[in-house]
Amino acid sequence: AYDTTTCDKLQEIFSLKENQLTKHQCPKSIGKRANTIYLLYDVNPPEGFNLRRDVYIRLAVFIRQLARRKPFQNVRLVLPPWGRLFHWKSSHLHQYSLPWSQFFDVASMRRYAPVLDFSEFLDDISKFGLLETPYIQVQNVFKLFHFQDMFEQGVFHEKFQIISECRKEEHLHDFLLQQPMLWEKNFTCLRYQGSVNLLGDLLRQQLNHAAMQTNDVKVFAILNAEVVLHDQWGDREFWRARRSMRFAEPLVKIAEEYRMRELNSNKALERVQRPPIWEEERPFRAAVGGNYLAVHIRRGDFARGRQNTTPTLKSAATQIRARMELLNLTTVYIATDASGMELTNLKAYLQRVRMRRFTPESLAQKALILDGGQAIIDQLICAHARHFIGTFESTFTYRIYEEREILGFLRKTTFNTLCKNASRGNCEYNSIWPIVY
Ligand code: GFB
Image (cartoon, rainbow, N blue to C red; front, side, top):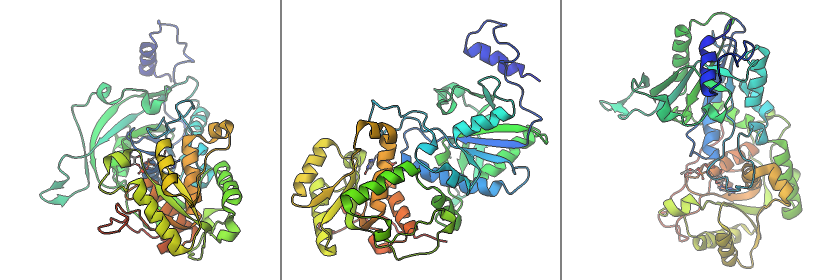
């Protein structure tokens, strides 16, 4: 029952001499255990946190539906540990290989679709006796690429195609998902065009190839999962998956304490809809929000690379003043990734305005919440405001829009965009995607 190929491979990786790996250290061949399929996935490394959340929704909706069909009743989606993201700038902090439970309520997500945090996957696998060694064999890793020509004779077809010339070494420079215990048995480059449901065909094909036995355990992985499209963006299933993505409780608590302390606001005053579980949420449009305006001012790469649509700080400040006056609000909450110098300038432009911004109260708190948690706290505070203005084409802003839709705000208080110019001539606005129940 021992997988000698894998054993040889391990010897090679660790340059171990023969006999150093005992039979017990060699992974057992995967087979005849339980009819479970684990789907690992990852997203193109430079992509940011909030696009990754959207990719998750595509896969969660898919996995939920797939799990209703034979032979996929025991399929599990494994959440990729968060590697160090480009935007997480606090280099002194350990922000590597983080579980989703650091940021989200995974139990809540699991009530929508069968998903596992990576450590839960390891626990699960160990129950099948597949972790007697630290290595897990991944049957096939698919790295997705776009087709060069999306429209064949002017028509968009859903399709995938194996790229015959594909060398793993060119495409995988680290351990799979940066997890040294994963060992890929096969590596396939695949051109892919279409919705996430096409992955069902791919998996079915794989299972046919692998002659899945009744009690098999199989592990597959999809790299560059952002290539797959939503089945239906913005429909009821999208929103159910989205609503199940509640943030981790410690972050919610910090945001609540901050709103109480600095903004004199709480859920009751804000009259938002937030039942204990997302399944109890209903169509609702009566939230009023805290007595403050919230603005997401995206800087960093947006200020450099998207100058046509990103306002200067001076212009943003002018727009903020005008909106506060219009709404008769005296406090503005600013969420931003601006540098220290930019913040000083913004404060100068907003002189005599009561401006608030969340910063962790201690180094210990920062080490607890990390850069990702700080960003979520910003999103939560923006989500609970009386009125919100976001940045054009920022997924960070989109996720705040969604949160406000769930909480039950009127659309006109949510779907607002900072214009390039304060005069609002030729302003480009973000699209409106209302919640569907
Ligand atoms: O989340 P994200 O993909 O949104 O990336 P975009 C932006 C990241 O910057 C966030 C930080 O995940 C945060 O780490 N960040 C941005 C902020 N705004 C704030 C804020 O208000 N508060 C805090 N605390 N952090 C994408 C980029 O950005 O835009 C892509 O990820 C690409 O690389 C694309 O540039 C066009 O959608 O705004």
